[in-house]
Image 1 (tube, rainbow, N blue to C red):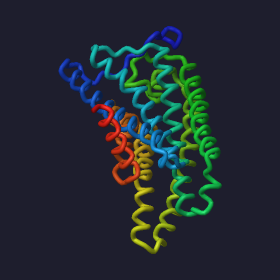
Image 2: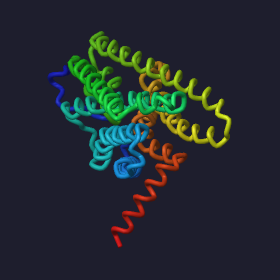
Image 3: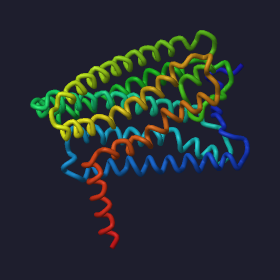
Image 4: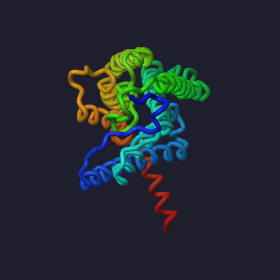
Length: 311
């Protein structure tokens, strides 16, 4: 049986064996990837170029868009390349790098979503203290803490996962290098250390989730006390997109890592992985732009400027 020292590459899950279906998968993922690049890229450019969007809320949204671009760029291009070239291989070093980068980004994204709920809480429940509590320095520190936490979490999980002896071959039952699928290749009882690290990370994530829920309970209580309908509508427009993104991210991610083995299957694992690693990155720009008039105006202004430059 091979061990980790003799494994030079992993074999990722093939979406199909039929060439036409492989090309269809490539086309679908290419469309989703380009949509994510366009949507998140527009948010990055609009927030960076429009001085009216230089506020804490849009600063965190810029970080979220950057993380979404990173997440989808870490997993989807390799899956597209494998489908296009009819291969399943990814090198051992490439798999470790994919796990490391993906864990950084997915962890930092969850912490940024938590910070964004705090931003909405202060803006609606304590508006008079907004400037003092969320100044530029505080925002930079919170964003740096989110990215730094992601880095430390990635070091912990990557080192723990890839130090395990692999005794069950090298076929990863997923379209990218996902930690739970790599653990299935490890020797008996050797994976318990990484399972403990996963439980620790899930516990921290649960704490963030409780904080988000508590923040929104306070937010909705404050919103319902706003006397004017226009004021309530504006407050909900600020909060509902973020809440939708949070629940899409949390529900799919928790189901992927905490679902019982009895309902686990290759097709189910694949669908859930796409839902938490691909769909949010492409859906988040749409969710945030649907009810955000300031962002819509900034994007329209950006398109207008681009048209003028091309004339």
